[in-house]
Length: 291
Image 1 (cartoon, helix red, strand yellow):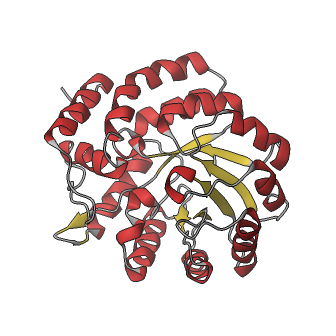
Image 2: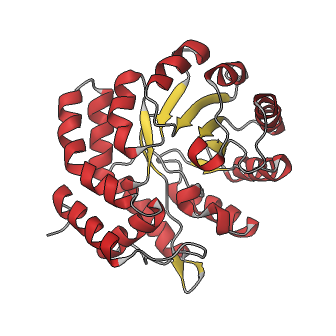
């Protein structure tokens, strides 16, 4: 079920409020464009600045709009175990297919603390869990050995790996097993990640170029890495441009150029500088997304 391109879905806003009509249209567009699943309310969905009620509303609306046509992996992470349990149980109740759970940020748990946190979430409901390991944001890096311990639990099924370390895929195949679902969390290295044993990407760029990112993933899954590379080459300037400033800001600007949603973001994030806007526009032209 969890293979291919999964856009890390943006949360559209209108005058500071959730724009649920646009959110529903984005779900339909992603399905039509060939995305293999959706991930609402991750960092790209501006989870840090959503209220609990808004977080749960977005998950519920995306699940309802997807209507079982493609899987929904609901963002359910927190550095507070009790809060993450709430998000896990809500995602299960509204029909999400899995939960994406980030390693607890800021409070810097030990590896033993990571095991305790993820075990509590595993035991709180029946929803499968994909670990999100992103040490650049959370400060904590879950070791392959710790992940291997957690992989013994039946509902901890995979990882979104945003370490940028392609050797980590092989390490985790050894500690977690070859069936453990390894999904890239970094657009620029997703092609190489799959060559090492990955099976997909949770992608920021797929918010604006879903068909192209899906094409890269489908070619990789078919073993045609040359075909995948040709599309990845077209996408690479856009990947880089989008992440010049925080990726969700870059991709919302790109989406606004195509009339998909507003470029509105919540403070403390701000709109792109003019210099970065020009880079995004150049990346879109290189990818063939605009003239």
